[in-house]
Length: 155
Ligand code: CUA
Image (cartoon, rainbow, N blue to C red):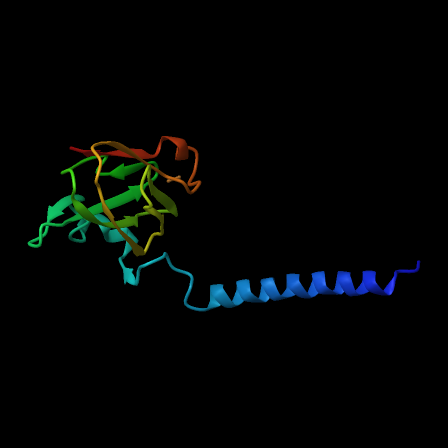
C-alpha cells in the first residue's frame, strides 16, 4: 500500500504529539502535581474525626472579621450539611475527605475544589448576595454520588 509522503509526515506528527502528552502526564504524576490545587496541607484521612479543627466541622469567626469554614466529605455527605453565613462575609474554605476523591462545588461561586483524602483543599469566597447556595459533589465517588450535597445559606 502506498502512503503519500505528506500523509506519513502528518501521521508522524500525530504520534509524536500523543507521545509527548503521554510523557507529560507521567512526569506530572511522578512529580509534585499529584495533589489538590492551592494546598500543601496534609492530614491523616483515618483520623479526620479526631483532628482539630476538622473534629468540629463548621464556621469560625477570625479576629479580622473574616471566617473559616471547615468541611469534611465522605460517602455520601458533607459535614456540615447546612451552614449559615452572614451577608458580605469573606469565607476561607478548608475541605478534606475521609475516604475517596470528592468534588466540592459551590453553585453560583467560583469555588470548585478537588477534595482528596490526605489533603486539605482551600479556597476563599466573599458572599455578596443573600440566598441558598447548593454545594454539590462534582467528582463521581460511588453509588450515592448524586445525593452528596449540602447548603450554604447567606443572610
Ligand atoms: Cu462525593 Cu461524588
